Length: 77
Image 1 (cartoon, rainbow, N blue to C red):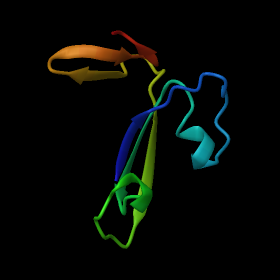
Image 2: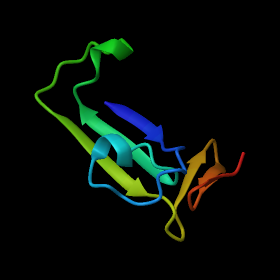
Image 3: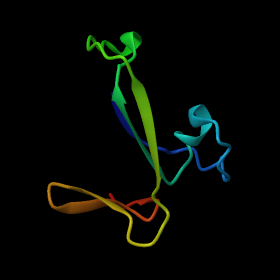
Image 4: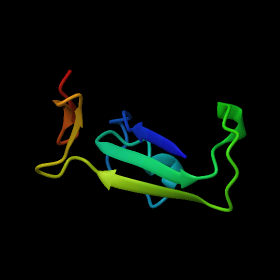
């Protein structure tokens, strides 16, 4: 699988194409299942399921070690 926070703020509208949308600034992306071999992943799975969250919505945040590091689509560190 994968986990990433989108940083491309040049993409402003969802395209319904995951390859673009998962990189859009203000989003959080994770994927369950098969990892890409080029990344060194060795897990095997029948699926690769992408999940995308719009983090610009009020109340959206990422907390690490008890500290808010990302809130409503913006870095806090």
